[in-house]
Length: 412
Image (cartoon, rainbow, N blue to C red; front, side, top):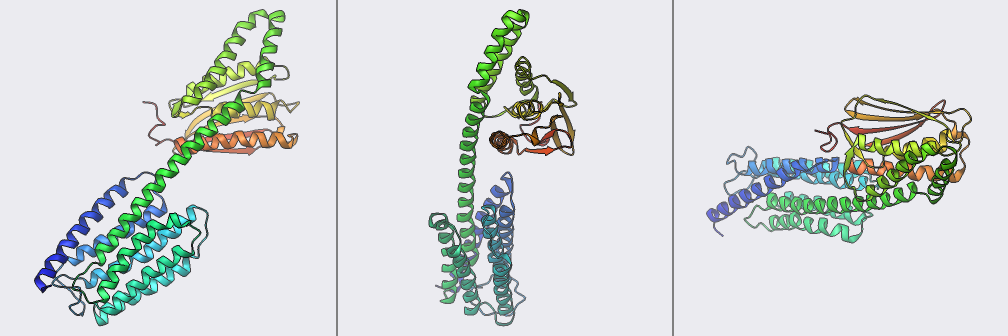
């Protein structure tokens, strides 16, 4: 292989690598819900692109031999490439952290940083040669060791390991003194494979959350339509026929509307207007007020209503306030529902003045917790919202927060 041909081939490889790296960068930058893991990945891409750009610069300020240069400046580029392994180390540790697996970040990062420093020193004083490529080989062998020691299933590691083969092969080629500079291209291929794996993980996580959401919606539906609640409601409506016949028709409308809204929630996979959820709340309140031992009043202070919310979100909180707050208290008689826009969030508060916390039975607490967790899951999956339940001096407060800047949250 002649020097001129090697030079042209290296330039061609660098140009292809830049195009691939920029393509990945654009797609990664447009991805939604960036995490720290994706941040480290994008940082790695930027470092590689910087190194590839330097390879196209015919000026080299460092002393080096002819290995891997062939008319393009690879010395400074190699220093850039040496920083990818520490960044990728952070990417891997962050991905493990998202799965609640603890890693000694300082140890592995320090180890990779020392090798990056060694590569820089070798390039400055000895040029790009066998020791530099050997140091690169050690960097990626350390990453393979990290994968081996991780708690990941081998099927989860296979993409990482295949990706590591590219820079390891490039290091071996450099050590063999072959007149090709493949390190930048090899690192781009590693990042390309890792990005495909990341996208697959995101899709699998989305499918898992959708399945979990569907399962939770079924649980919520069954939790809302209790046979004893239906029986008690129908029995009380029957009693109204004798005592207060004028209330029978409104009670039946409330009862049928309540059942319809619960059934509709099964097929509703998106967000609904807040006032539509409040219609369901009003039907439930009307139905609950005809039952014995359910004497209470509801106050509303709705400062903002033009936003969307997951179905069956507020109604379960009202039910908890009635069943585990007011109904178990001799003093509580009021439920407050209020909404406002505060610090970039739509805030919904449901507050009762009961004393249910001190009298709840263990099975009641468990049931209440299941309903609350279902609401939290739907809020998180559908709109990145949150639910917090706070015990007050008198009664309980449930607070829902939904980001104002959510694409589907605002009613236009």
